[in-house]
Length: 150
Image (cartoon, rainbow, N blue to C red; front, side, top):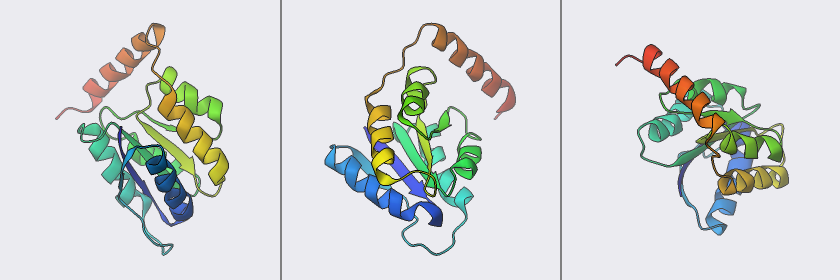
């Protein structure tokens, strides 16, 4: 799986740990920054990942900011993006199984690297279940079609 990843200054350490972890798992990771702990604006980095997912250039994305809230808001502005902010492994699994989440978002000041690794692994291994969940995703896609005109 090709994964684009980015963070703001609140998630640099966690992102670096997760990039290494994903590569250990054999994943193809595109690290888009930030690469230092100096202040940066999360919308600038979040939109890079969300745009790649929206355009189909990568199969998934991972975003990290201090709480994850800002990155969630940014990522979900892009058509076809289903970004899920998670704080535990159950939410990471449900994000994929029920919502086909293609971007996983975490708070670098909220979760530690051990839990973050577990959530990422859970999300990667989970599969969308379809069924009644597909009907709901279809409704979300219809909302996107109405609101993202051109």
